[in-house]
Image (tube, rainbow, N blue to C red):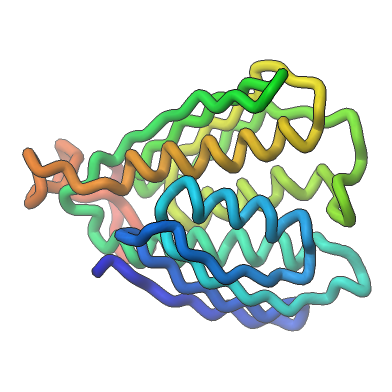
Length: 204
């Protein structure tokens, strides 16, 4: 089973995450930020990654540290569960409609973190969450997961639909990228023979 658990504790937050890549989308999520919980539930449901997330942060200040550190912990758990990334399809993409909204998400589990973020909001907050924090979550996830991630909202009016389509797009693209390819199950999907992580040097 491709499963990993991560604990991240700082002076600002304490976050515990368990990710099982070969799951069914089961989830137990509590960050103290209701809207973030809703988005992470979408991530688990549509990726089929089982996720357990428990975060305790300095929400009396604001949601920044909790949001960012949750992104780091989820990304690290996914990276650890992938191991050397042998046999995975590596690439995934999704076009996600949600009523008037359409978003595109593309991922490469290359080991090299890089985020392209082309998402704009017309509201400062959704629920109790600042909309500027969504980019912080995706940036932290990208860094810790070691992936190249492109997130674009192509069009849309409703801010809730815009960001939810982005999280669902991440979920569906990850679902494809982490899948084991039966035709190459014993191979690293790179001509260099490695996909870089924290313990490896080089590029794919």
